[in-house]
Image (cartoon, rainbow, N blue to C red; front, side):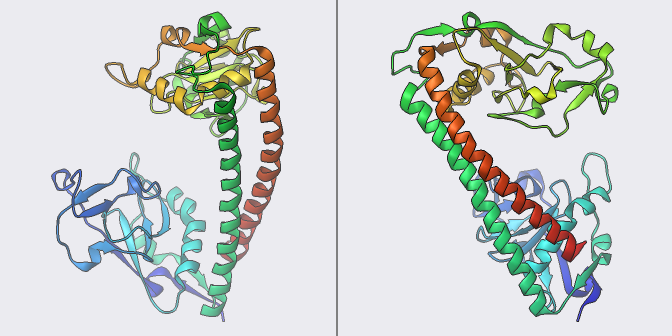
Length: 379
């Protein structure tokens, strides 16, 4: 039998505790779970307060963040105090915990899109309690949740495979070239300005975000640049007229991109040809290699863990926000192995990337299956 129920018929939503800043400690008896670390499991504050049982959550509890970081979580981090912006879900015996978890996961984006507020988007307990859910019998709920758990495990395994392939490339880099900061292999070293034909960043067109278009010349921002990969999400576009004012930062094929300001400082990738023609804003630096260094090799060097630490240290040495100046980029000391060694390493990377493509295809297919089943059961 399948019925339609409101959440309040199968679940009681229990708020955590609203804290004053002076009640949050750097260390203490109980970690405090907030929306800021709801999905990251790091940067905890602590509290020594002794509270009623409902203000703690423990392993196996189903939680839901109802502001900022929307979504459900099955908690497995031991006993913690949870914040007011999180609900602990006290379930009736009519609903399976994992079934409700996947159902809420499916609904999270919709709940967020229907939320209130500007800076801190949120939903209300009354609205959440009135939401309707399709509820088959418990046996069928368990079958559905078991299916999603199996697919989720496959997705996690595929992501782990990709991560291990990335680690393999990093390990191979260190094996061949050593620590690029210490240069323990004794390679020739040159400042980056001697290995490039261009180093420079752009600007935000007049009008800011309001001036962006759905199509036109691509405008690369720091949010698009990740270590070793380009993120197409929220790629901005500008008009030919706006782009003409940024002619000094025209992107060319195989340019290396380096974030030079803000929280994403030091991230680096190769520009994908598919987004050309393109420009960059002031937070992204173009690095165009000359004949002495291969762009892909330079990118792998920049995202090496040792070199990332160096870039973060440079960025953190300023008086205000994280930033790397053009002069600091030009003065970076770069190891320059012979081109034949660079080419050999890049050939190894190409072979690993072939495996990554195959794993990514399997991951995409599995994710597509997961999404279609979500729509089937919860749509």
